[in-house]
Image (tube, rainbow over all chains, first blue to last red):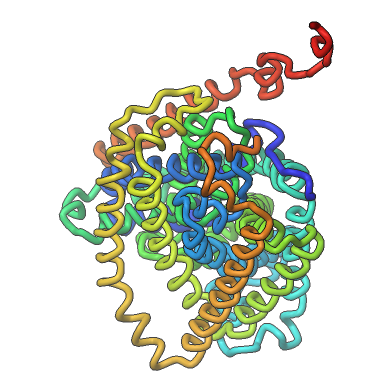
Length: 524
Length: 53
C-alpha cells in the first residue's frame, strides 16, 4: 500500500494553498479589471464578493477536503462520494479533474512565456538597445499569433526548449510528492515572491516624474489612474460581475484544488484559520502588490491607454515598454518576470496534484506510472495549444469553457453539496474541529442560502454577456470546434476512469463507509 | 490622485494588511503541529495488565 501523504507543517499547507491562488491574475488581471470598472469604487463590490463568495467558499472546500481526507480519499471523485455518502456522486468529481488538467495545459505555456521574458531581460535581448521594436508586435510574433504551427518554425525553437524545461520542472516537483515537492517549493517560492515584488514596488513608487516633457505622468498620477473612484460605475451590473469574477478566479475556488490540498490534513489540523490566512495572503499579493505596481507603472510611461488594456497586453506588451524606459529596467524586468514565473509555477503545481492523486488512488497506479500518464495527457494538450497559436484561439477557447464557465459550475456544485447535502450544522462542527478561531454560524447560513444564489446570479449574468459570442465562434472557427472536441474527449476519458475507479473502490471495500457510522470511517 | 482615491487606496490596502498580519501573527504563534500531537495521551499498549488477574 502506498504511504499516506500528509502536509509536513501548518505554514506549509497555508503557503501551498496561497501559492495555488497567487498567479498572473493577481498582478495582471486585477489592476486592469479595477481600472476599467470604476478604479477605487471597484473595491466596494470586490470586498463584498470576498465576504459573501470568496471566504465562505474557501472554508467550505477546506472543510470538505479534510473531512474526506481523514476518511481515506484525496481525489475529488472520492471526496464527493464521502461528502454525499453516495457512490454516484463521484461522477461530479470528473469536473474537478478536468478543470485543473485542462487549465494546466495552457497555463504551462504562459508560464514558459514568463520564463522566456525573464531570460530575455537577463541576456539583454528584450532591452531597447538590441530590440527597439514594438513590444506588442514582438509579443504577437513570440506567441505565434500570426499562423497556426508558427511556433514550430525556426526562430521559435528556444521557446519550445523553455516550454519543455518548464514542463519538466513541474513534473519534477509533483513527482517528489506533497511534502517534499509542493510544500518544499512553496516554502521557498512564496517568501521569494514577496521579496521580488517588494523590490519592484519600491522601484515603481520612487520613479517620481521620469518623463521631463510630461510632468503629469508621475507616480501619484499612476496611483490615481488605479485608485481614483468613479462611483457611477457601481450602478452598472458589469462592475459587480467583474468584481465577483475577479474574487472567484483569484482565490482558486471551484478549481478542485483546495479540496485536494485540504484532504492531506490531519483530523485535528486547523482549517478555519489556515483557510483565512491563505485567502488573506492572496489578497495581499493582489491588492497591496498588484494594485500598486502594475497599473501605476504602466500609466507613467503609457498614459491613460494603459487603463483599458487586457491581461496579456498589460503583462507582455505594456510592462516591457515600462522597463525599457525605467532606469535599471533590465534588472527590474528580470525580477518582475521571474517573480511571475514563480507565481505561475506555484499555481500549476496545484493543478497537477488533484489529477495525480486520482490516478494513484482511483486506479492504483504507482507515482511514476501516474506521473507518466498525466505527463503524456498534459503534453498532448499543451502541444495542441502551442500548435493552434493563431490569434491564441485554442488557448482562449479552453480558457473560456473550462477556465471560466466550468469553474462556475463546479463552484455551484460544491456550494450546493456543502450547504444542502453535507449540511451546515455538520459543516459548522467540522470547520471548528481543531480550529484556532471561531467563525459565526451566520456564515453557514450564508453558505446555504446566499452564496449559491449569488453564484447562480453571477453565472447567469456571465452567460448572458459572454456565451453568445463564444457559441457563434464555434460555427465560424475550426480551431474553436477542435478545442471543444478536445475538451469533450478529455472529459469522456476522465469520466470512464472515474467509473473504473468506483468499481475498484467497491471491490476493495473503500466504499464500506457508506454502511458505517461517520466516526467508524475515520482512517486517521 | 484625488482625495477619494487616497481614501479608497488607504482603506483597501490597510484592511488587507491588517487581515494578513492578524492571520500570520496568529498562525506563527501557535505551537508546532508535532508539539500539539504529543500533548495527547500515549497510546502504547505495554500488555502489562494482561495477566493482572
